Amino acid sequence: MRILLIEDESKVSDFVARGLSDERYAVDTARDGKSGLEFSTTYQYDLIILDLMLPKISGADVLRQIRRKNTTVPVLVLTARDSIQDKVGIFEAGADDYLTKPFAFAELLVRVKALLRRGPVNRASTIRVDDLELDRLSQQVKRAAKRVELTSKEYSLLEYLMCNAGRVLSRTMIIEHVWDQSFDGITNIVDVYVRHLRTKIDEGHERKLIRTVRGVGYSISDGSET
Ligand code: CA
Image 1 (cartoon, rainbow, N blue to C red):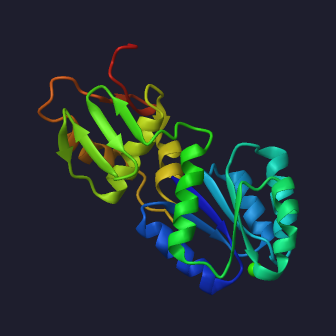
Image 2: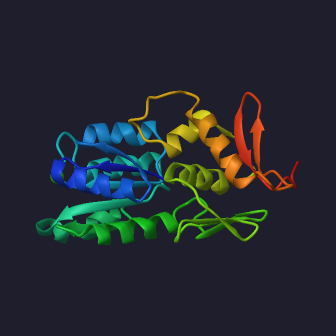
Image 3: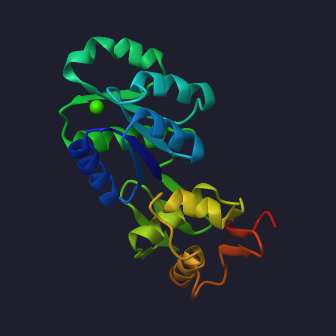
């Protein structure tokens, strides 16, 4: 899951970004409304966290412009206590939820999870492909009812593949969703991680679920459609 955080206050931005990364989300941060808007149109996000008081372009204007182009991405607004009378306006502008500053990270996380669950793509808490099962609440993965231990990147990669089961995902799509914007490393990182996943998910099982589509990318499926 990839999240965009638009917040100019570095203290808040750092603490939210660090907390979300610890929870295995890929987080991009923007420090003003203009760059936030640019990020939101350049990359695909599963959620946007938006501060209202921002330099260059205000949060409310950013939100209106996001909604003009993208009606489905969930937006969580951060507001200062004195602007709470504006909350009707925030919802009218297209926010899905709001949080008043100062807030505890635990509360932010609950709202983030709730928004991601009800978001536009497959947000079911348990995703299954054949006998492979991924529980997004406990972040546990099982193959043939046996627990599979994954690192956090392996988990994120598998979650993205399973949310899009049956679709072929290019390496670029995978990098954009699973790694964050600071990533500019080796281009075969996806292949390396898919290899790790294969070892843990498919090795020792007769049915192989992870497929390579030569020249295109990867997909996960139970094979019934091919
Ligand atoms: Ca601010």
